[in-house]
Image (cartoon, rainbow, N blue to C red; front, side):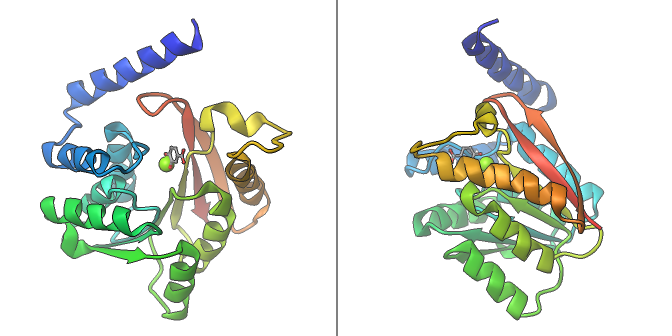
Length: 229
Ligand code: DHB
Ligand code: MG
């Protein structure tokens, strides 16, 4: 099967799953459309992946979730649903426009009261959270500029406790992680960032990790999972 028809089939199967399980919730899908219409890149997680994040958070009994990379607030909304009305999601976003659209989407979904959007470079926000002695998070979802993944993991460790689950998005990138020579490829820094993520996950004795490939409407990619020991 050619790569193209495999991708078409994977996207069609995602549609089948969404429809069979009723995963496309109207208010969240409206938020997705609002983000695209506002010019945000269509790179948010799929509905099935969003639901997966929600289930993981619920299994952990998570009340506190940290997200790095808000975009239009789609994954944020799934995570905010999981923490319940007493819970909190702190989400970091570099782009003011993304943060504005996310705030609008969270308000429309009735989730704004449990989400704090922090605008600015995530590394600065994470440092501020550490300095403020912020309570540890139960789940940390890293889905921002891939070149800084290791920085986010290091700060994330300081904001976690034994048992915290760290999930990193986009750890396969259509197989680009296999490239050893990246040269002047504009995506090189981000691919290297993902390769460094694997080395960090393998070598840091404070975590136990794995990664899974995914296919579907978001192409061929994957999630890494690390349990803080
Ligand atoms: C990109 C970023 C993402 O977080 C994602 O899920 C897919 C693509 C990107 O920067 O291209
Ligand atoms: Mg992503």
